Length: 427
Ligand SMILES: NC(=O)c1ccc[n+]([C@@H]2O[C@H](COP(=O)([O-])OP(=O)(O)OC[C@H]3O[C@@H](n4cnc5c(N)ncnc54)[C@H](O)[C@@H]3O)[C@@H](O)[C@H]2O)c1
Image 1 (cartoon, rainbow, N blue to C red):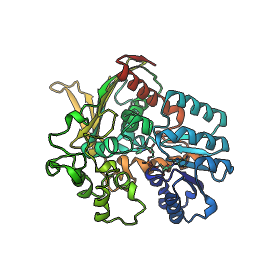
Image 2 (cartoon, rainbow, N blue to C red):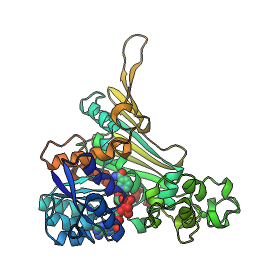
Image 3 (cartoon, rainbow, N blue to C red):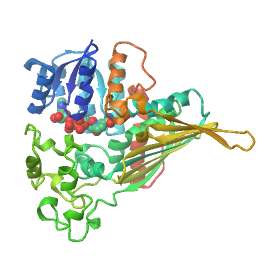
Image 4 (cartoon, protein in one colour):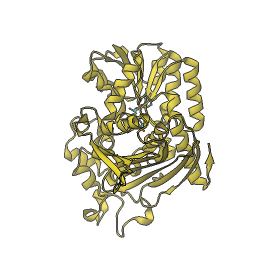
């Protein structure tokens, strides 16, 4: 039984913590640290914690000495390193959310602390655990497509996702959340590029992108500032707060309704009142907020062996999806994660043939039922692997130890700098 304390009792940490209910013989929640009293109390009720098992911060928890085997650190981006350092010094192993650092400097500090304390820090790169990606990784490791020549990746961030998180939501400004939209949204995908090219360092990065749509200049004529209060075109607007949040009250609910989480079982009337509150960004026009993170960005990477890779983050798409195409010297792998299918293609030299291909369907891998959580089934598989690593079992091929997760983040920081300064960066 691995005893775990929740640090930062928000949406993400509670998702991983729910593994304690799925596997009550393997993981037990024995504490919580969060400055928000309501969140501490909710966790205490959920997991039957006494008041002495509840702490107001990671720092207060660390000062008490080691009370459990590990912590799940689900604080926000800019808190990850400052909250993890004292916990490592106290002797905790840490499951740490991504992006695990907000600068290259922080990466060095965290890496140094991990080496000094000898503790484990595993990063929540949940996509490595989604069957779609782990199956492709197995095929790459087995040499099925030969040497990788090129990887093309893309994330299409839907219109409702970008509006809820990167325009109206808490990742709308880098100076507020600590991360660029590339890092907060796509550090997973950059990690995947380095995971597929494991052992080969990235050497060059360039990037283009910008914020071009969710700006005042693109606001429709006659639009108001507040969807439900003063907007004459709300009924026809693709970004109406009424259509996004009242017609879909469960979509992104943990972000949209966080401001009224003190109301137990909030009704639609409570929610409508909240969307009429002028201080609430979710009440406001997506073209008239103070968001500054980019709504599109493409990254180009060269690896030391000459392999090249691209990743495009595109926000405002009608359908959310992640696409991947890996081209090797002997064949190709490609698919859309959200379809739960991928294609394996090989050179076919037979007369009248050019290539052979086979489609693999992963629908029965537990992804569509929600049994393994979000991210293509990655969420609960990841926490299960963390617990099994702490039990001393051999880590899975998806295991995301810190040392193995550095390169994806380094690409992201370099890409943001390259985009802003219009330069190519040598890593
Ligand atoms: N792995 C993924 O795919 C994925 C998906 C979404 C979000 N995330 C990341 O997960 C992280 C958490 O996101 P969230 O939406 O759950 O955040 P959240 O805001 O809901 O939760 C963060 C919690 O941390 C608490 N906190 C702040 N300072 C603290 C401290 N010093 N000690 C203890 N607790 C503290 C806050 O009070 C809050 O309750 C973010 O970094 C986000 O980027 C990862």
